[in-house]
Image (cartoon, rainbow, N blue to C red; front, side, top):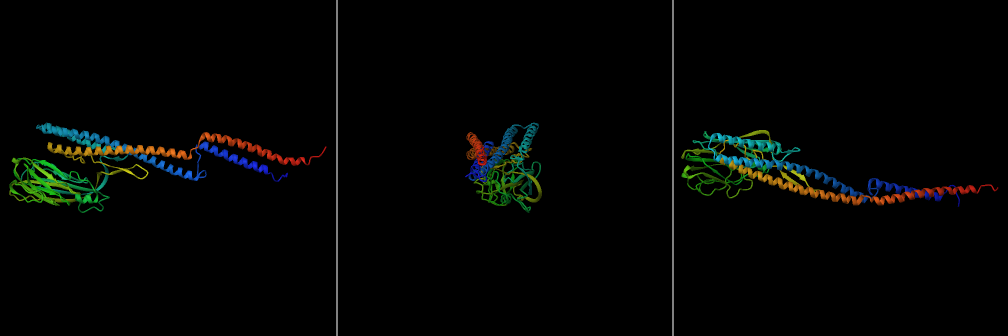
Length: 471
């Protein structure tokens, strides 16, 4: 049937043209973007999976950047610790040089060299900073602290003795003044905590209370020291503070135990029984005979209990038979001040939240126990430097192992990122060669549809021929 109002062939041609035009647009978009799935309209399931993977890729990229920064922090820390290790070795060599030098001028020159090296340690530790992070000096933190001073006044001059203590890293023991040329010894015991931990400020803060508020490791919980009290015979009184947890102290001379915690004073330097653990402040006394040689102090020789903290806070030399010297103890609560604290530097290494925790180390002169060496005898300096060498070795080992772990995690994270990129590509990337061929085919379909529409639109003209006049 011929009709002007209805042209089914034209309508079919229009549909074919629209379909061909849509197909051309689709392949042009895929070629322009390089993707066969450009949105949820194309393929919801594939698009959602790809978006999830893209999110993982973005997180892994951020993790990689964090690990790169952490690696730089570790490189700076390791370089600084290595240099400090070299300086500590030089200090030890100079300390041994003191043992063979009696000339006062030469000794002063060596002390100046040692103090110069100690100053360099502080400079390196304070400047080993990357992007605001310093793993060698710690982090500036406001502190509350209590300062406890112990004074013991003896009758005789007592040569300086080595600082003997096993204290946590939030406590330090400093010799405020020594007994060389005086008749007393005074020590300052300073325990501190960050203000955000010790809030409000405590009325009293001994090392073990500090450890309960902020868990900390104790340096040298079990230790042995050798000391020469000099040529003056007499009775020595030792102020020993075991704080809260029970600790032991024994004093040996010429292979004989002449004093121990929990044992009574024995005149004449006679043998006493084995030490028993004590808590709190004690005075341990014994008679000293210089002819029998040096004294050996042993602390927690059988092993230190968990949470132990102790210190020798004073010592006095008096005539045998005189009253036992009792320490005078004064404790003052300091106001808030700024300290350098060790801290944990956490680096996320995986999408599941795994972390590599790096603990900063205090390898400043004070942290290594090398502050205030001026005037100490060679043996004391050697002992202090030997302990410092152990601390710096531990720091180097810690930083080295953490750096290797970071490198391994970074490498693995990079490989997983490449795998994810490949997976996303498999899901959404277009085969451009195939798309080019399909585009060309769609364009031909489009052209043919245009021609078909033109032919269909010519059909109504046949009606006009029906009305032509016969010649």
